[in-house]
Length: 248
Image (cartoon, rainbow, N blue to C red; front, side, top):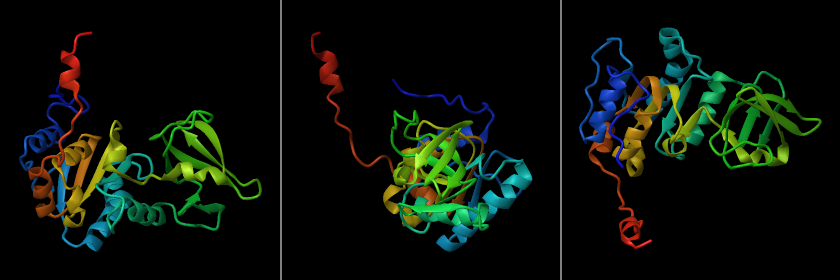
């Protein structure tokens, strides 16, 4: 079976045409100037400039122009976890921009600081709490006396002891791998050659097709071209053909 159609977006969407182009190994047509579209490429060369531009896009420009909420509607997807433009660093940068410390309760555990209002992701299946790897939630309560934190998953409160917070991480930014199977109103994707090892066609295609209403690429044209022209690196050996041919 091969997926040949995208149903998340309308047929006239530039997200769709861009995704098809990438899937076929072609650089997508990039909208010119201030033309209104659902797909944009904003060129920026230095990693620091890309980082700062992503903050402005998420905090100010996209909400002002498209009416999307920064903490709930806009998802940044990056090819890697490490580096200046990786998920870990960008999560901390966007947390400070969107939900800075105001003197209210917060907790530091396992390399993250959590505050009320933070967007978080469950990173492993927890059958006792009925939350699963990839579920997104918002921190509702931090109780430093009782040493617990409450996260709302689509309106359902789930309680965590501070010692169990290794099951969570901030989710303002996710790796593209982590986003597979999900969709978001808006996706912002940094692309830079510092992501060289992960600049692959299949990852870029996955990131593009996560966005329902708006996709914004931010970075260098060289990195975009590199991702488009590099098919997935390794071949997969599943023995599926042999198993299908075996008599039942």
